[in-house]
Length: 266
Image (cartoon, rainbow, N blue to C red; front, side):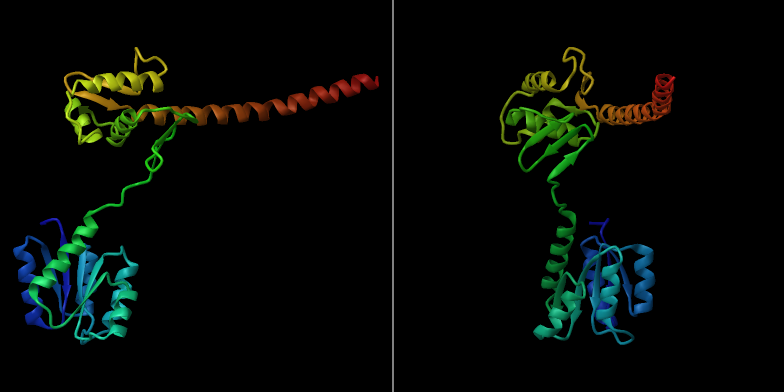
């Protein structure tokens, strides 16, 4: 947890030190502030993942500072307060706090809430759609569109293509592909070769000389993202060149038409 930075903003020096000590025992990086001025400086300097904020600071309004924090890069905020009625809790949460803990509280409960918030930050939301230009992967409907056409893939081929594309050009071994694409399967890693061959027949211009799903000797396979990007750039360049050519031809065509009209008049 050493990469997780926590800022404690607490007016009570004894409580502030106690909370900081316990968090450091769990390998969190901790910075402490006793006032809003110190808190703002520490936040801008260290960019903490989580801010433990005392709502009842003596020198300023903790609720207003919570709103300021929320407008920044939206760090996680655990608000501490001696006020425990429903209206105060609702006010704190609406100000931007992710959790609210009323004083007095037990240390184990405090640490559990911190851990839950940090875990929430570390759990990214899975994307529903991946777009690689010429290749789009719909993870909800498990469909793939390649160069404008939907592909007819088996479930195994879809999973394999998704894992290869998600690796963003990094080579993956057969064992790693098998583990990521079919985590519950008990199979020989060499079966990956069979599925790759089948997939190449559907996505490669020449499956015998593959350029999209490349074989990396003594490693496994990689997905050639660069080729997709190159194709997109080339297509854009061709479209732009065609448009310019069309524009350049228009005056000539107009001149020809006018010349024909004059000739007809004669």
